Length: 158
Figure 1 (cartoon, rainbow, N blue to C red):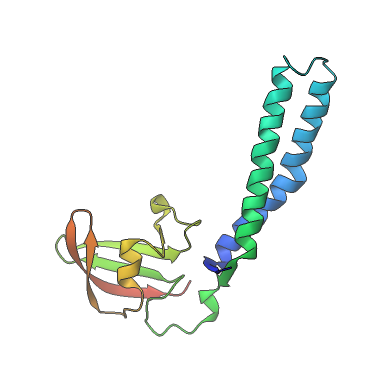
Figure 2 (cartoon, helix red, strand yellow):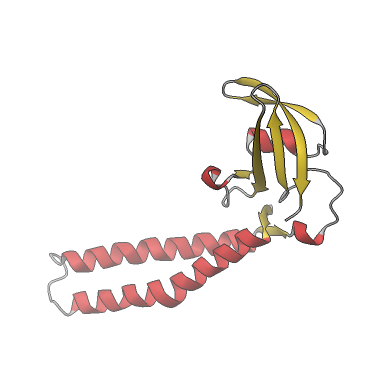
């Protein structure tokens, strides 16, 4: 199986969610199923069917997280020397040379990506255009609105 890059923070968040599902959510659902069974006829018992659906979702999510964690290649950039090169996990500030607008992105794994928090997937066009480049490089990145020219003004390993 191939490994998928994940930041140490992303792996920790998945572990917390997995622990929550196993220690809080799963027992609560089991309790709800037992309580619904006590109400009698299961064919017409909406509470029972709803609890079973929740259980199915919960178990699926547990398997999904366990699979992701088992195939994760956890990369902690805080333990690497900052040489000004854009790598997975780096926080990069770029300047759009057309609009003079600065924006900061952190390059993370697919599951961690959240554009509202400026966390972009390593597989996104912007990240692919930045990876391997260095501080003060000017890069042309193909975006939905056309090719945009950016200058890398800061690279941090946070």
